[in-house]
Length: 113
Image 1 (cartoon, rainbow, N blue to C red):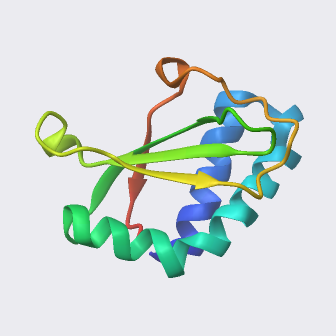
Image 2: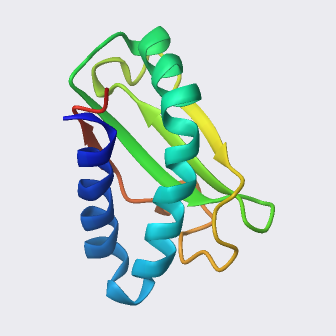
C-alpha cells in the first residue's frame, strides 16, 4: 500500500477522531510526517520491529510549540519492546492534539512500508 495510501487513511482516522474543523492541521501534520517517513521512520521501524503488517501509532503535542510526538509500537511486543518515538518539529503550532500521552487515540498503522 505504501506511505501515500497510509497517509490518506491517517487523515481520515484523525479527522474522524478530532473533527473536520481541524482537517487543515491534520493535512499539515501529514505533510510534515512525509518529510521524515522514507528517510528516517521506515528504516527505524524495520530495524525495531521487522517488516510486520500492522503497528500501532499515537500522536500528541510535544512540550515545544510546533512539535508533535509520533509514537509507534508493535502490539505483539507491547511489554517486551519499547516504542519508537519521533519528534515532528515542522508540525503546525495550533495543535488540537492532547498534551498527555495517555489521552492520545491509538490508531492502526497498516501496510506502512
